[in-house]
Amino acid sequence: MNLKIRRAVPEDALSIALVQVESWRKTYAGIIPEAFLASLDIEERAASWMQNLQAGRMFIFVAQDEWGIFGFISGGELRDPMDGYDCELYAIYLLPANQRRGVGQELALTLRESFLMNGFSGMVVWVLERNLPGISFYKRLGGIQIAQRMIEIGGAELPELAFGWPVL
Image (cartoon, rainbow, N blue to C red; front, side, top):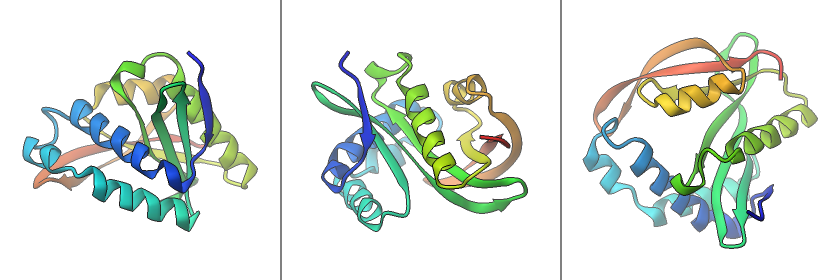
């Protein structure tokens, strides 16, 4: 595989949206209500990613090979205050065919390096409690469970866990 990880640009918005929608539909089937997953709109997600990319307040990186973008990671300042933490991994998704090949780890390391270069010191990520592969991934990266909460997605109340890295 001819892997390249690079900073995302506005022209990547549609590809990022495609990865996000496809990944959500596969990863969260049976967890998030099917009606919500079916309602995910690629064009709406692309518009949102375009805004994020143009605003420049987030770190967004893409993974691509000779066939195009197949994964991404985003992060930035911590959205909800948590003692000892100042940054957050917002999202990381890979198309299913490209999972379990070390690319997620490479994306996470790239984000970590960007955080360190920008003065951040402790990172948090929130993951649905029933997303067992995601939890396993964050534990393999050294994350420790630090909090939990309930969130609403598509009309369903779902438990979510926070994993943290107090020292990047």
